[in-house]
Length: 375
Image 1 (cartoon, one colour):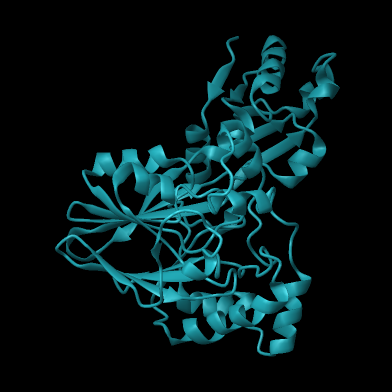
Image 2 (image 1 turned 90 degrees about the vertical axis):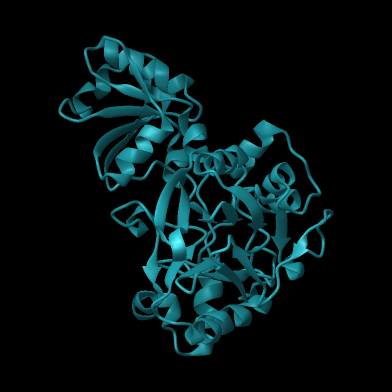
């Protein structure tokens, strides 16, 4: 029986379409516990590869025959070998091409909605990392917000849509993933914007992303307006697009709020975080659709695969927006911080332009889940 390989793109569709999948993950237990492929209807069995070197006979009864089975490892080699052994034993299985490495890198573009006069807004969902990037397009022009480092995904998408990338923004200096914003701007001639309060140590030229800055796209004047919203970082800036969408960066998520400690200043910035969430955002229309820069768990995805919810719903349901006592808020935020993101200090250095790692080093820096939220 031939062993089939499945791409990260195919797995992504299974996640978005709520398909069933049984995953045999042959990475070490700690790697699996830290980070795995999440799906609404996925089942898992984690058996480290080294336990299967003498054969797969002991696990055959644990592998279903009535479901699609996918074998997963870190980079592909181990899963291919295990899949071949299972195939030789008579099971119909597949393996993930490129392993978790490829899963971490894959982006799925999904249309969020229409903008005035024929414009469109797209969300690029990085399922394996929880990152969310955006492209607003209108009458031949595009703006990109919080692009990850796979720049060809965005430039190719722009070509498919027949639009020119004119503006590239980062809502803040990212610490959990490497930004592709500056490279996209260099490739396309677009302007690259970064909040100046986050950019004091950067070693490259940028345009300051300041409170109240407004750019328009095309002659239809889709407004992309900046709203200073510190707390995750001191420069964090949100965007209101077309008076309809609120892009919150890493300040506000669907089910949680941003962590204030990734520059080592949690005690200093927790007050800014509260002020943004409980004052600045409270002045905005509750009908705005919140589009964050990350999601934490698969349950935050909507039926169409997007991550989006009305601001009014979050005011009602998000625990981080409903802690009236300021001292309790401060304690909740500072006492419930997850582990720091993998290599976050080096990632900050890369995003400042102070480090230029090679391709493999970039991959290693980003491996693992995102950890931008307060638990």
